[in-house]
Amino acid sequence: MKKIETIIRPEKLEPVKEALNAIHINGITISPVMGCGNQLGWKETVRGSDTVLTVLPKMKLELIVADDRLEETIQTIISVAQTGEVGDGKIFVSEISDCIRIRTAERGDKAL
Image (tube, one colour):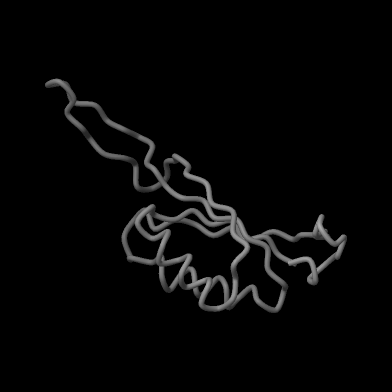
């Protein structure tokens, strides 16, 4: 099993969720986050004073997939979230040693 953590633009959340649902990936944890990277932020004028905001709102999605679904899931996220502009986000993949469904005590891929 693999854990996919992805940071995407907020406006891409619904299209990414719909695309993942279309390939039957539906166990997703979603969190609003703030961060900075190559996009650097933007300048805003507040009460006549320029302020540089260095963190931007993003959405973080976390999901666990079976090993054989990893590439399909990654390609689905990229195909929908990619704009080609700085700030599209990142995808992180890590190994998960086990998963247990609390309700039934099922383990491994069956628990997904």
